[in-house]
Image (cartoon, rainbow, N blue to C red; front, side, top):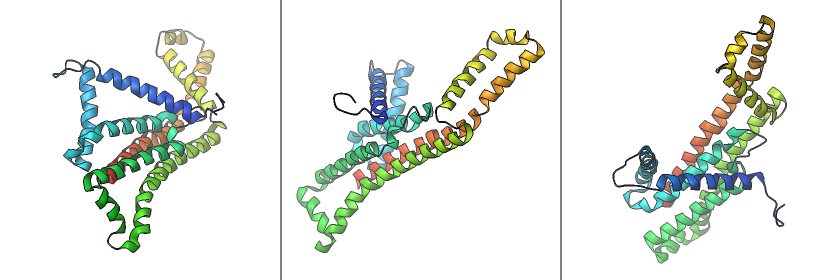
Length: 256
């Protein structure tokens, strides 16, 4: 606890991700010129352009004001979703904690209602809840509330499910969530050694010692293959897909 507040894994990694993204965007946005003169501005314009195209396609050309929001949202979701790639048992993806998807879904809900009021006016906004007949009021309210709820549980369910399946596969293969981290470190170190000048020293070893070193390297690397599959699907593929789906649905809800 810190100052009477319990510091959770989600809180730590959420702040680290926010600090990292803030620093990245400040760096990308600094020193911009009308005519790009370096790769940094080209990369910044490509990122902004991709989100701008997505917003225009789903919300119309009049929704450019939402581009910064969705750029920040997509970046946060993307990094959060793939953060558990660092290692289960050390990093819990913030989006695998229901509080994070719920907070983001509430933001989308607030923007949705605010945009409806802006477009239709306050009177028409409240009138829409009793259309086509007043008896539909409860159903219309439920339909509005259902959007953030579905956003929350879709993202949370996919990320939590992936984390749990990954933990089960880890436990089945090596008996722990933490051991694969050390296996990965050992495999990387051995790979670097074998690809550098140390390889020449390895060639000078006796046949038995050389076989022992190579055998240890192979044994350390074997668990990396199922680990790569687990993280490749549940963290990278599913993480990117869920970030895209969350942003896409948020755009459609706000523009509706």
